[in-house]
Image (cartoon, rainbow, N blue to C red):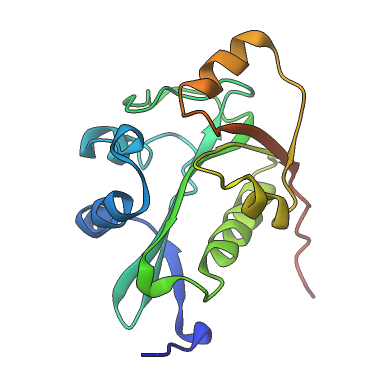
Length: 177
């Protein structure tokens, strides 16, 4: 079945999305990168959440776990996040699209929506760890690898052999009109 990308709805992610999001996570990542529900849900509770859900015909087809975080300080896989971390940068923790949602540009829609919200909150930089060979995808969205400290390199390595630290400036989104 072919889907019309214009029918994709991007909205804030809520706890009601957790079961479907966890299923998408399981189909998208190897077991060592899959997080338990408490860790996953804690991303919704930080002071600056930019967690988004993408639906198509009422079904969750993708999600973005992103939040304000300390620069160059990615949380460990499976960590339950504290609710009192300052939001210095937009940390993109996880982007996953279901098989049925791929090729519709959903990842780009989710990222651009998060950028818009983060920019309006004054965040100027996005950081992420590209896993499982996804660095090329992130490059298409303007991210680039940058030099990092040995301490940060050790944290990045815990995300897998192909993990890469990437950053991108967040362009300001001026209101229209």
